[in-house]
Length: 275
Image (cartoon, rainbow, N blue to C red; front, side, top):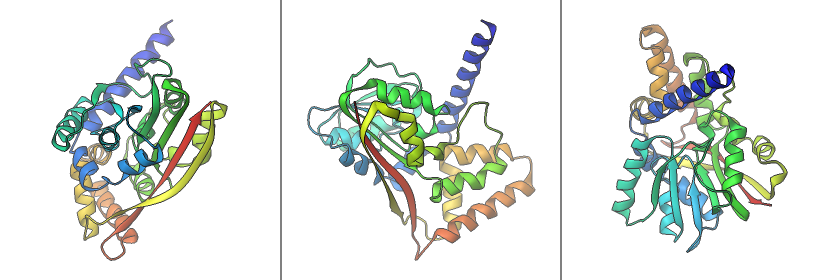
């Protein structure tokens, strides 16, 4: 019994840490200025149409949820971090989209079995620490015959490489937590979903990012706006030498990816049908 209570407390503490991390900086600016094109790609892949009940898991500020609502879906945007939901609600109002915003843990969703025609996540569920638990919830809340659609950064792509670059400077992950970019490997996602789904289709694509003219602009923007990057820098804040080393490493990463002032960031787009 004590071990169970300890595990629950540890999980609550971990989720609180994640909630705080994603509230750092300005992730809505990342979603709006850098990766806005991802949401519509996922909505199109899920073939969202008028009247569909849609759940966006780890929706952030609504990168996919808002386009799904504009496509006619009856959408619930769920996320662990209320600050992101509040920002998304303002964005939705500005764009004339109507949807429901609800705080929820991707690993313990508060929705009934089979409640949605489409369950999707756009570079969101990949950051839930326990991948199988999150995948089980995606399948559970999707109706039989419904669509599960996922868009996640690949380990080999730019953002996956950014996380690899930051890893030596980050605190060690908690026991049992899995690396987010694994969700960008098709075989990993297929194993998570298992035989509960059919018609699985995985496609590797890229998004063109041309916001940054110089690699230093990328680094400085992510240091200011992106929660995971901010958290890593906070971990080494009392070590100027390591901070300078990470500064240089991120510039080198961006420099190597830039072509004529733009970068191509790879992601995996995967859709499946629940059996």
